[in-house]
Image 1 (cartoon, rainbow, N blue to C red):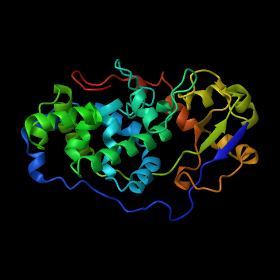
Image 2 (image 1 turned 120 degrees about the vertical axis):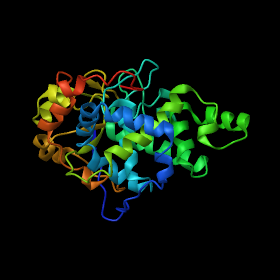
Image 3 (image 1 turned 180 degrees about the horizontal axis):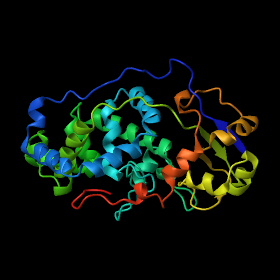
Length: 303
């Protein structure tokens, strides 16, 4: 077994906050206004999604800034999964960012019979942000096209542009879901506003198997069921041989974990991700928690 703590030394990630440069006219577009009205009719649901997002914001914002992406992209999982880490769609998309298996593997996420990295929030966020940054470049800095492609695929958006002869999102022959997806995100991120920095609560490790989760929990001195609840990507109780996976470990096990780790010479993750309070994470991930299982309002695109 090898355990690797992911750290970031000062100065690796830019701390500069960025914002979308959307005009007021965009928010006055009828389809965006319609979605804002829809969300205003469901304030409790939107607030629950925001509350579920709060533990992750301190960990996701440094990644967004490292990619020079707007802070408000952190609200995209609200319309993808309602910030439910274990969300799986009928089409096979999974996790906070609702990545399809092919997209996940394209951006370095392990998806296997024993482990689904799309359900590992930090790994999935890195992959999703890599994809979004790539889409933004691919569509020459047009965020509406990039967001449409995140939902429908860049090939479908490219073909719609070729058929219509226009790069105006509102004029493209795209699926109805995508035509609603983009204005709904615009509305949601406008209503949710600029995310606050919050207090970091997570510590991420890379672990190479073979190792059973109960054995790891015993070594760390934490309950196996709590460790499992905070690591939904692991489908069973066995970390597979030869696979390096991300795992979240609480403050209770942190001191013991640091006695077991080998620190990488390459800084891979933000020091702001240090220190997981597993009591809070248990509440976050526990599917018996009403906040976790609450359904979205009728007509919602995702979960």
